[in-house]
Amino acid sequence: MKLNVPLLVLIGVVISLLIISCAREGEKSSKKATQKQNKSKNVLSKSGSGIQNTAPEDLQNDTAVEVMDEKDMLINGKLKRYFSLKEFQSVLGKPDSTQLLSDIEPCTSIFQEPDGSVHPEARYVYKNGSRFECSQEKVAIDQVNFSHGDFIIFRKQRLNRHTTLATLKKLFPNAIKHVGVMDVAGEGALQVIKLREDKDNITDGHINVFLKFGKLYLLQWWFPC
Image 1 (cartoon, rainbow, N blue to C red):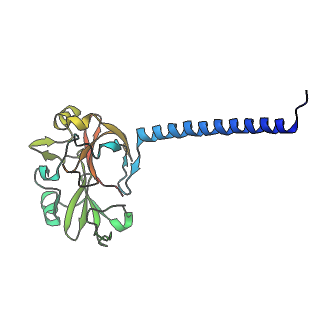
Image 2 (cartoon, rainbow, N blue to C red):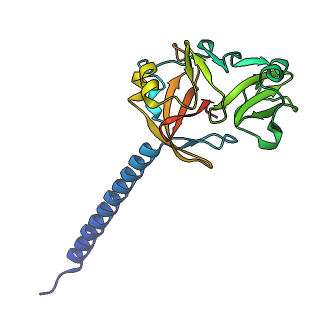
Image 3 (cartoon, helix red, strand yellow):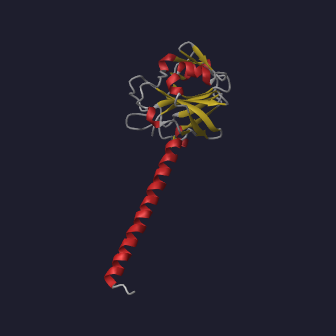
């Protein structure tokens, strides 16, 4: 049976359309799979911190998630989040090491000026595994490592390396419902709880509370680039 040219052309067009349609469906399926994978991982890196953020990103405006206000906590029972270099030396002693921010070039800085500039002598100060930012004699806590004895007094509750997930659940029952996992450089996968910084959600940042082997390990103030 002979087929005329127009019919052959029509058949060719139909076959081409079917191939394109299948290819598009394949792309959509692949894209959905990738989105699903990314949603489960939700990796947002913070330059210089060594930490990759995989906490659920939809909690920023969830007012049910508890607030860990810096006004309600004291580091080692004595220091608020912001203090002077003199107070640092008085309470914590001599730093273990320091590093200029200009050498690291993190995407954000606690003492960053409105125009985005940072003092050329601004630096990270390290003590007992915890990290502080220092600029012109002013100091702020960036992240607290609990493994070497540092602790936090939060609303009269002492939080340290012995604090369990069960204890944190009493303080942050709603946030615990969304406990996730993060990949931390040099540490591997750690459990993480994401808390709000203020009750009005004015800040774009949040607080990450990490657990290792079921115990409190690290607390980090996180702010997007």
